[in-house]
Length: 290
Image (cartoon, rainbow, N blue to C red; front, top):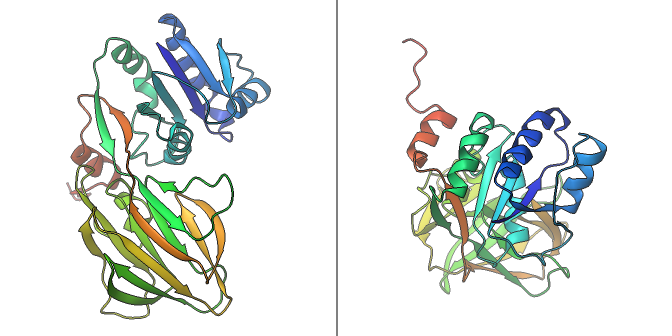
């Protein structure tokens, strides 16, 4: 089995977990590809020199599986590198919450065994695609979590004229607007008051950021809907963010957001379920009085 490994570059204290992972892969004689930046970090900071058959410097690679070691941010970057290759991704969590990277550090050995024995399931997660008059060359116009339109500084709020399926929806006077997938409903959208959607829902959610109106609420729509945005701003520009990857846009730019034609495949253990993650990560139902 050929496995592409991606990791973050700022958790030097997690060297034991990284070493444990590569040792487990070695026991199964995996063909390992390593992200070039991560490999350099392993060498220079962690003093780890994993056996590998090649380094990954761009999106041109082939593998049976991609493995992300880090937090959800690392998982999102891995999804960008995987793109439309249809390679399933598994996330080992060395960060904090870990909704996407939900394999804990103490599960590494048994999870690697399950991978090579084929004992896992795969979930397909919706991507959003952004179309604009002009995006920077090389900018990946897809988001697994959310597309966010935001004011660029501490200036006054922006006006976001929003159409859905060609019909006028609303003009949001706010600090921004988040359009999120079910996967992203537990990320930025949740932090600004949006609802939680189960990953298998055929919906997207539209959530304003600090709206200047008490009667504006999050909206859940079908994922077949096409959302079009036109922004007005006193600074004549705004920030477009896709899963944290940001680019400055002129207010002359019109944005179209729709469901992508392909999905990201996420590997899950048979005993891992979203409702369990909600209880464990968000402490639903937790009562300290007990």
